[in-house]
Image 1 (cartoon, rainbow, N blue to C red):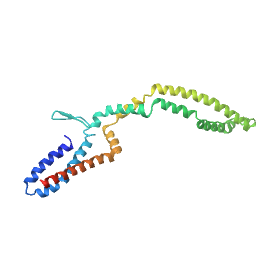
Image 2: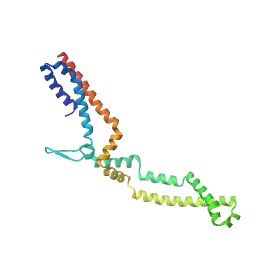
Image 3: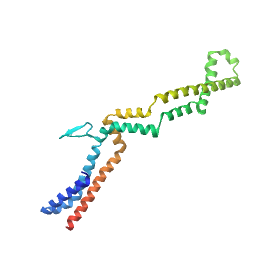
Image 4: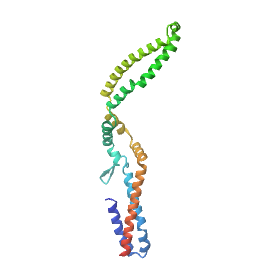
Length: 223
């Protein structure tokens, strides 16, 4: 039974009550506000039932549970598939690692580090080298190390990327993480994310109930 059914039943009952009561005039004018309250309460309960009860309840042989707690496992799998197929994959992760590790920015930073190490720590460890290490020689040694290290990094990153691609299952990882969330955490995340939307749903229920109440008020007034 939805909101419109409840309001129709309510309106029919209140119409009979209003036409038979000595205080019908006052009651009739309260119809829009009572209907608004019913509309708000209906949607408020509907939002709450998305998350509650967290555990399956058995009432008079009927089992019921909040939508999100009941469907959390399916939600986890769907979200895992969405992330892996539409947002990010192991291939994209490894591609970014490859690009970043051997980028010009990374190699420039590595070159500066090599040059600083030669000029400071190497000379400090072997003072006699200062007699032979001219600026030109330091530059040549640095460039040589840069080329060799770039090839080494490329091979290392390729090996590491292949291992990640074989072992990292984004879909499974996301699914396991979401499925492991407690029902309370899921509720907290959803409420924080959609707080305004949930309030809007409750407000729409109140406005719809008020509008239906006004219609009933007009119908009763002209009856």
